[in-house]
Length: 236
Image (cartoon, rainbow, N blue to C red; front, side):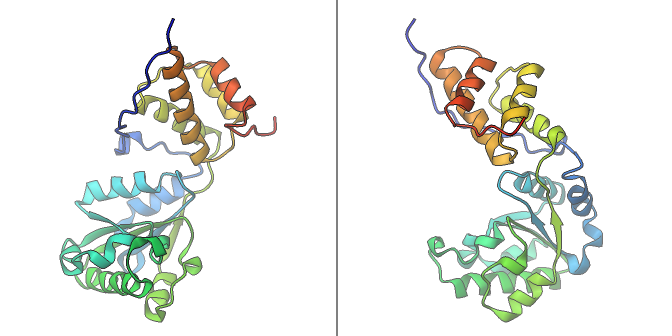
C-alpha cells in the first residue's frame, strides 16, 4: 500500500475554560488570575516555561473580560491610547520586549510598555503580562519601567505533574482529532521528557508519523520516536 499523503493542516487549539485542566502545578496560578479584582495595583505577571499554559490562561481571562491582546514586540507600533482605553489588556511574551528581532529599538519598546502600564492603570483597568521568566530577569534598561515591573505580583505556572501531563496529552491529541488509548498515554507519560514543550513536540511527531504510515497512532510509533531520540526518555 502506498504511503498516505500528509497535509499540514492548521490546528484550532481549544483555549476555553473547559479545556484548561487544573492540577497542583497550575491551581495556584489559576486562582490568582481568577482573583483579578485583588491584583495589587491592578496588574499581574504570569510566568512559566514554554507550553506551560500561559497563553491558554491569559486568553481565557481575556475572553471573559473583553480584554485586548498584544504581543510585547508589537507595542512600539501600537496605538497605546487606544489599547489603554480598553481597560483590560494582555501583553504576551513581555520578557521578549527588547528582542532585537522585533524591528524596533529596545528604548522604543520599553517606552511603549511604560506608557501602556501607566495609562491602563490610570483608566482603572487591569494589565496581565505573560513571560517565561520573572521581571527581575528581563533586560530592561528604563529605570521607571523596571521598578514598576519588579513591583508587579507574579503568578508562577510550575513544571507539569503526571496529572497535568496526562490531561495535556489528551488535549493535544484531541486538538488534532487523534484517538488514543489510556494505555498509550500512560506509556508516553512514563518515558517522555517532563515538559509542556516536549508534549507538544511528541504529539506533533506522532501525528506526522501516523499520517505518513496511514495508520492510527500506536505504542509502536511512540516507541520508535523514543528510540530515535525524538523524545528524550525519562528515568523509569
